[in-house]
Amino acid sequence: MNSLDLIDSFSEFKQMKNIDRPTMMKVLEDVFRTLLRKKYGDADNFDIIVNTDKGDLEIWHRREIVADEAVENPITQIGITEAKSLEADFEVGEETYEKIELESFGRRAILAARQTLASRVGDLEKDEVFKKYKDRIGEIISAEVYQVWKKEILLLDEEGNELLLPKSEQIKTDFFKKGETVRAVVRKVELRNGTPFIILSRTDNAFLAKLLEQEVPEIFDGLIVVKNIVREPGEKAKVVVESFDDRIDPVGACVGVKGSRIHGIVRELKNENIDIINHTNNLSLMVQRALAPAKITSIDIDQENKRISVYLKPDQVSLAIGKRGVNIKLASRLVAFEIDVYRENEEGSEEEYDIDLDEFSDEIDGWMIDELKKIGCDTARSVLALNDEELVRRTDLEEETIKEIRKILQSEFQDEEKSKS
Image (cartoon, rainbow, N blue to C red; front, side, top):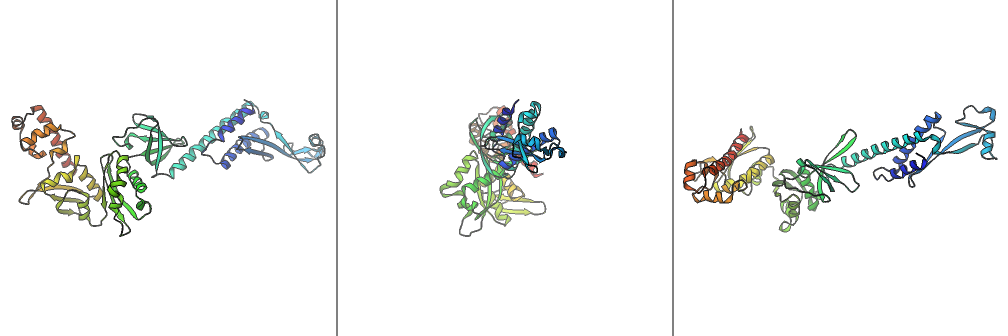
């Protein structure tokens, strides 16, 4: 390797976008001062001039001119006779500057310098990337899909830095192809063996919070604050907001005229249904708002056991529970209480909740649900109240199909019992 190879290396390194000029100059100087110390034992009398624009450097050996017989250290001193051979008008007491050619270090030393430089610059780049994204945790960024793997997606930002979007941080219906631009929030930044790992997320609550901040100026300006968010990513979310200005309706501001503000967020989140709720310190009122659109008849709050019993009319139960129980699950997380749902019969006495058969449309075919409705079974418990023989006799469904339907319906109530215990 000759000096030109090393200069080419510097030309490459100077293009590193994440490293500022003073830092780059210091790294180059440190590398060559190490070389000088190895060769001469001392580097104090050497000046290293780095040109980061051109990507090259010069090394000058500075020595004091003394009488020939007074030379004690040839590294720091030069005799007058030798000095005059460099320039005839030199005098004792002046200094000489001699350029050190890179070739004088030898091929092996230059190769070691290049490797050391590459290693130092690489470490600096990693450190800069780590610091950059450590300060951006909780912010939304856009990146391009570079490679799609089974458990994660590799993305590149505008500077070519690698970012990871794990499968667990993707919405279930997310599907990205190479070259596609993805928006996500920076969830965490880790250093593993000196290498920064930037983990993105589309399921984190911070993603929805930042989307709202971008779409709703009042949130960005601090006039409306997001108090709490609970999500089932891709399915449903509940967002509690509060206004510091009595003239501003926080719910209306977030939704926008004809849903203009919220629609863009819903599309970004793959049609995630978003409920915007006005904040209140009244727990009972918050439960009612959290379970909307269901209308609650009465509420019993057990502060000691952190449980709330809500009683509704039969036609309101399925609305409160929601599809696959998502609505009540999110409401429970929102108020930090376990919510138990009961329905009242016509006489006003309560009984355990029931679920409309239509809520199982994603697991049970529509024509099967219609068959059950023909015989007056429009809820899960009304089906479970009849035995298999009765259901086979009264419908056009086969016994095996009936058993599968019963299994699906029973599992829903078993899950609810587990959550209560």
